[in-house]
Length: 394
Image (cartoon, rainbow, N blue to C red; front, side):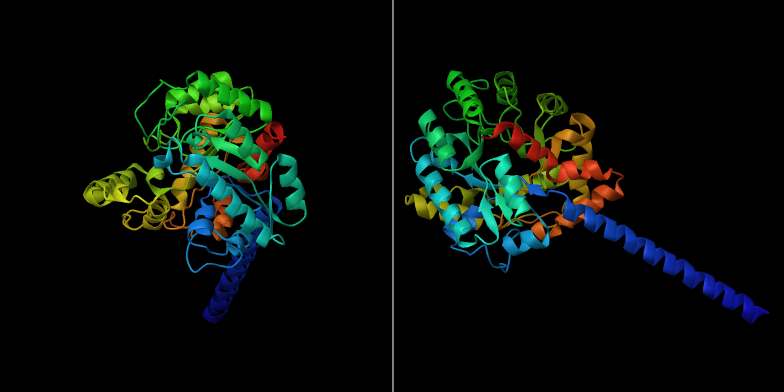
């Protein structure tokens, strides 16, 4: 009798485990299918710096780093916006030169890997390229100082295929204030408003990541088109100057725009932000040596290669912190106004659970686990950015 009871219990346990395994497998299959069918768009990455300054071939899987074509394919990323970051110290009259170098280098890299990737200028381009089974790569100028206060340079960059531009990086320049610098204008000045209107006219997407709060609200009063924050977080969760307040998120939602939730560790949690600040304070004397390098190309290379040289390695933010920022942005701005803008720089640590572009399916799993509907997950993964690109670009 005891043996029979034991057999029944054993059989029941086996059946229970069998059901659990099959249910888990079914759920995983459903998530994998959802991720594969969705348009996955990362709205910010500095991949071009590896191309220009390290001479690396993005068509092969690199020994380290977050993004290359094999990793993008593994993560089933359909669209990778490539940021053309122009060093702040090149302002006022040496910015455009670097921007042109970055554009040329990235176009050559795309042409070299034409079987896998293609430059995307418009939303229609994105749809066509992805439908053809390739990865779409829009180009974005990072830092409005790149135009050297000249609208003709803005138009030139656009004609070369640049589809978006951040109004500032970390300096307040000739027409707009940055969140990372002292204000010069109290937001946008008259030239800044002309830049916004000209970007509207030519169909170029305005990116308000990095701008001061005053600049943000001036942009929102001036623009006739939806804007993006390509790589920012939520200030309520971490009061970093690069993150957006709830008021800003509401206005962004009313504008029809989209925030791309950033993966940069100090932007995610206040604990890590403090640790990073403490580390920078200790190492500041070394950082001050760099401006003594007179050769600008050498200085740029040094700035790039030192990135991530020494980061705090305790209490690393995780994928759950990324998901928390997504949750908050959805709560405040609405699910139609949230996307992904990782800004995973080649030499910096990424959140635990996201080694690089290959781990984007983990975002889909996390959103599914948090109860998001499939159609809302698809919007966050890339559908929202596609809507803005189709609305603005031409």
